[in-house]
Image 1: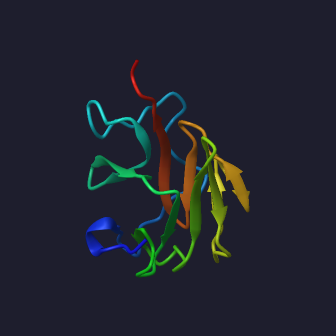
Image 2: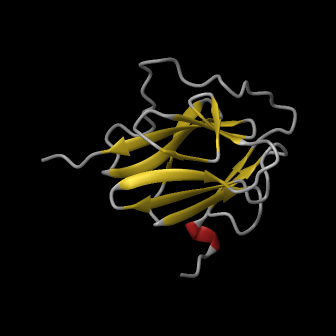
Amino acid sequence: MTTTPSDRHTIAFEPTEAVDAVQGPADGDRVEAVAHPAPGRYFAMEEGGSERLLPLDRTITHLGRGFTADIQLEDVSVSRRHAIVTQRRGAVRILDDRSSNGTFVNGRRIQEAELHDGDVVVIGRVVLQYVDVAPTT
């Protein structure tokens, strides 16, 4: 599948921004960028004082600072190829892609981990929260 620039999400950060790798949204906090987002899987992040939802709408999503990343995180602490999110058989997994600064899930450095709604993922100094919006019945 070929991606076009409109398929990608680019997030820019100030290079001096410091984020504690284990600090994320407080327990019980729910990130709501949209009042009622469509069912699906997202990474939520704070950007410019507001929350933004980044859809995970592919079977494989590459995260990193490089031009080939599906979700580009423009921070010097993020490797060009930092992490990969896979969706298979209903499960969502994140894999570290040999990054320099590591990938963390809920404060623990991982090589691979399954994601669950509300998990806090840290890529370099960038803090993301995994959000799984179930379809309403």
